[in-house]
Length: 194
Image (cartoon, rainbow, N blue to C red):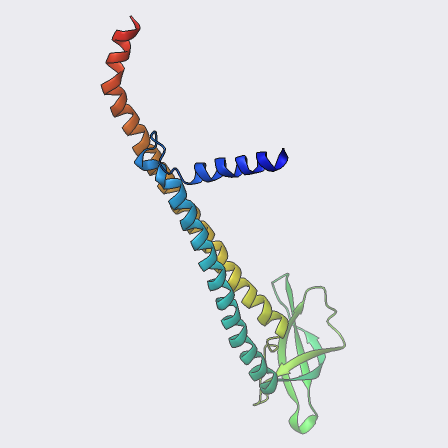
C-alpha cells in the first residue's frame, strides 16, 4: 500500500510542476515549470563558475605567495623606544636591526596589547627596505574561498530578485486575466442567482 501512495504522490508532484493537458490551465501556469528549470540551470552554472573562479584565484594567489616568499625575509629587530601615537589599535615603536656598519632604524606598528620592549620580527624586501609580511597559503586559500562565495552569493541574490520580480509580473497578469473573465461571466452569474 505505501508503494502505491508514493507513486500517486509522485504523479501529483509531476502534474503540479508540469501542467500538461489540463483543460483548466492558463498560459501563466507554464511559468512555474519554466522558472524551476531556469533556477536549476542557473544554480548549476553558478556552482561551476564559482568553483572555476575560486581555483583561478587560488592559482594566482599561490604564485604570488611563492614570489613573496622568495623576495622577502624576516629579521629580528630590537625595540629602541615607543613613539607617541594617537591610535588605540596600534602602538608605534622605533626598532633597530643589524650591526653598527649596516645598522638600520625604522618605526613599526605593533598591536596595542603587545609589549613595547624586547624584540619584534620585521620583514625586509630584497633591497633591505621594511615591508609587509609575505602572503601566506592560508590567506591565499581564504581569498579564493571569498571569491567563490562572492560568485555564489551574488548569483543567489540576482536570481532571487529576478524570480521574485517575474512572479509578481505573472501574478499581476493572472489577476488581470481573472478580472477580465469575471467581467464577462459575472453578470451571467448575478442574473442566474436571482
